[in-house]
Each structure stands twice: as structure tokens, then as C-alpha cells.
Image (cartoon, rainbow, N blue to C red):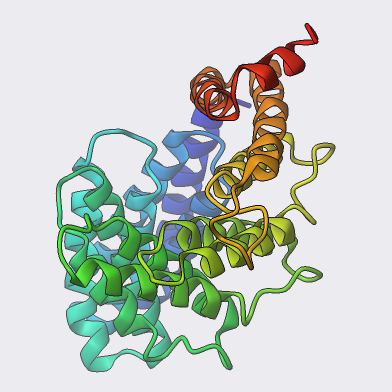
Length: 333
């Protein structure tokens, strides 16, 4: 059975069930929504997502006109399906934004706090994606995430809290730092990653933990601060935490990303933190070693752009180390 026929069969089965069911219009609308959610959760092809959208629309048409809250809930679900359409075109994302904003108008007045917070989180995701496509400023995404955090706190909703903090940090870092407020946004990004890590741990959430530690390392490395060296060594600690999960055996590309990030950090730190002016020959040499390892992995896995970027960094650091080190690395000495 092809995934297209699966989608068609699901829609046809849903319509038949609605036509023959001894149920109220409200119950039939809910039935269609449940089928749509099932299609959306495990899509085999994009046609499944479009079929889910069609079912959500049918559900809204069937719902009694007076059930505005029920329609808003269906509309919010349909927006998440539109978000999931894989395309470089922003049409579906813009439609998702419009639908979830309409849903929020009702949810805010009549829905539960959790429903409102979920819709705000999804609105933030939509706005952040559109901002990445240069179709919106990032501020609407930040505002939506902050509204969602009023309900999705770390005690009662740790998973959602972690996602929101991570997305907030990424949003803060995406703003060009052209003024003094840029320093504040960098600090807020670091704080958000650290907040996310208060509810994510190595044992229960290894992949999320590693991603957050890697991103925290990046944020610390570039934050504008008078504590540059201190932040640099904190960044190294974060990368080492990430590498407890991102091993070369289990996650080679992620491992290569993190050791390349670590190399960049090392190249800007003194060998002796108590003597910041004492040079960093040792750290430069270790940085080159890590970059060489990362380049080998990227090349072997066909990640051409990253391999080229790492090679460029190797050349720059090798020049800083001096010609004798380059000869030694090449085996000619």
C-alpha cells in the first residue's frame, strides 16, 4: 500500500464513519479530529499531512456553530499540521500563523491555561521559523514563548519548559548585536540554556542534554563579557558534558560538530588561566588536532561544507603555530 493510497483511504474511511455513525455533529467532528491527529503524528509522506488538514477542515465544518471552543481546538491542531508541511515556501507557515492566532482568540477567553500555553508555544515556533526565512522579526516569537512560560513552568511542565528555554535562547542569539542591548540578549541566551538544563539530565534525556550543553558552550564562547577567559573555560566544560553523549561511535557528526566547537574555544584561551598573557601554544596545537579529527569525520560522511570550513580553520591555526609545527604535523620532521 502506498502512502498516498493510505491517506486517501483514511479520509474515505473517516467520511464513511461520519456518515454512518449514530452520533451528534459534535461527536462526529471530534471523531474526524482524532483521525486527523493519527495521520499527522506518523506521516509516511507529505500527502498524509495534507489529508490531516482536510480532515481538520471537515471537522470544523461539522462542529455546531455554537461550539466555538471546540472549533478553536480543532483549528489549533490544524495549525500544527500546517507547520509540519516540509517546504521552503512560507505559504503553509503563514496559514498556520493565521489559524493559530484565530484559535488563540477563543482559547484565551475560554480554554484552559495549558491549552493556551501550548498554542502560544506553537505560535512561537511558527514565528521563529518565519523569522529565519526573513519574513518576520524575531520579537513575536520571543513574546509568544514568554507568554507560554507563564504556565509551562519547570515544576509542572519540565519537558515544555526545556523546549521553550532552548527556543528562547536560540531566538535571543539570532538577533544582530548592533547595540548595547545585544550584550543583554547574549546573557539572556546563556541564562535560558542554563534554565533548560535544570530540568534535563544526562541519564533521562541524553540527546537533549548533549544538544543543550553544546549550545550552551557556543553561547558562552561568544558572549560579550569582561569575563571572557572564565566563560571560555565554562564553555569547555559544557562541550565535555556534551561529549559524554556525542561519541564518535554513536553520533559521529554530532561528535565532530562539538569537537570543532571545542577547538575554536581552545584556540582563544591561554594555556595557563592564571597567566592569561603567557601564550596558548598548547591549546592551539590541541585545537588543530581536534579540527583534524573533525575534518576526517566530515569528509568520510560527505559533509563537504563543514569539511571545508574546518580545513580553513586548520590552515589559520597552523599559520599561528608557525612553520616548524606544520612540518612536524606533516611528518617531514
